[in-house]
Length: 302
Ligand code: NAD
Image (cartoon, rainbow, N blue to C red):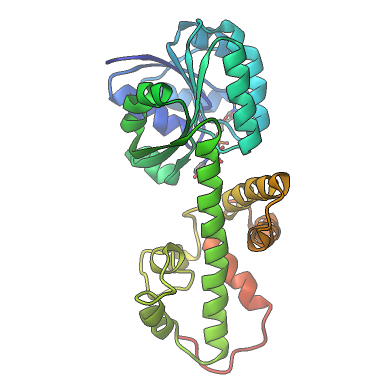
């Protein structure tokens, strides 16, 4: 069924996601504060609407893809009043779990319905419609959003109630951040012990050290030819985004009184690293920072 969708936030992720909705036959009313972002979306068939509230007033479902929780909550305060009662608001941004729950509450208080549905898969996944969505909210809301999520991705998981999608996203990325540091430290230790990258990879990738950070996004060049390490750490998944997601995990850890020392340490490590390289390096480049802190290796690492 073709829907009228308001899509707000047409940046790196939002533009290709909106384009895939157009491709699937939906009418997409797009809005962004940046005229250039709107221009790119219009080329893909999105109809530009100068005021977010006007797009929302005409839509039967509202999608947002914004930088952070303050943008989502600020926008909701402006647009919830403009929507028809019962309109479904789906926020795909990556934001604090507490902000996602606040967004649900504000939507419900205004007579609307809500779903948090952050994504993994990055810009490549957004372009190719192969994103994974992690959704939080009611069953009925998930079912209603599902055809749109399927038009933008290859998998959608209903994780539970309000905020559960964001919780799944930050817990997964906390595993990823901690495991990338662990894999990078292991390679640097191997270098120090005169063990080749290939030998460590051949053992660990088929043993109990196996994980995505090793076998897909291997932080040293050679063993996995497609990993960012083979292209001077061009992203990939930018260090700045990993730092952001680990910061959200750290907020949740501290807010919930959970003892998750490695998650907090990973947030600290990636924050410092992202301050140096921003979005220019893949998060696996952390191996270079770790290597720079140890003494010269004892043998040839390659
Ligand atoms: P981006 O900065 O490229 O796009 C965000 C857009 O939102 C910008 O164009 C900005 O102008 C617009 N915007 C901000 N406030 C607005 C407002 N009030 N009204 C209208 N437009 C507004 O960011 P992105 O890379 O597209 O990421 C968007 C979200 O997706 C973030 O929460 C990010 O963490 C998450 N995410 C990004 C990636 C990635 O690889 N880029 C991967 C997974 C998740």
